Amino acid sequence: MNDSGEAAEEPQPTTPQPPRAIEKTPMYTAMNAARYQRQTLIRDIERDQPKLICYVAGNKAAVDRIDTLGFVDMLHNINPGDPIDLLLHTPGGDIDAAEKLITLVRSAAGEDGQLRVIVPDYAKSAGTLMALGANTIVMSDSSELGPIDPQVSSKDGNGSDVVYSVLTYLNAYDAAKKALREAPGVLRIGSPSKNSTPRSCASSSRSGTGRGPSPKICSNGGARISRKSPPN
Image (tube, rainbow, N blue to C red):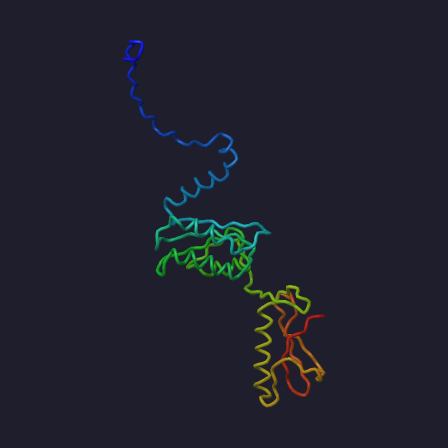
């Protein structure tokens, strides 16, 4: 009882409420409808096929190291050794990043696992290198792979980035090797001295992509190999 003589009301037991389920709002569902549709299609495909992961990039979205997190996320729920399908569509990009990404996928598949790359349209340049890391490449009549010609970035005399084709260096090496066989006593390899004036210079027979200066073979009494100096 309280001070006024009235009986105090006993507290009523509180019924615990079940946790509220988190639901997608109609607006959120509509904004992400394409994503949910893709997820449904992927689940339908995976019923009778290996796990499917997709890497689809536009013309201006190059393969880059920042894609690593996305690949790690896609591979999170794949059990080691499970066969994997990689749907690949890319114009190419960083070859170091491409090697890292395909190595991640191969590691998830395991040494004896099966990795199948599906190219619905094209996988060019670094994308082609990724496709070559698979056990099987699946293509249609309209699918495309590209030539393999890695590019190396370097600084010119002005500090600007210049992209060189690795193929041009390989061609220059082949030409130097041939010249050494033909005249082993007169071949000198290195940069021309300040006092030397090459009488003739012939570019490597294949120029690769043509981006950046090509290595040249210059002769001045003997054969000399040098890289074309960038303009100052």
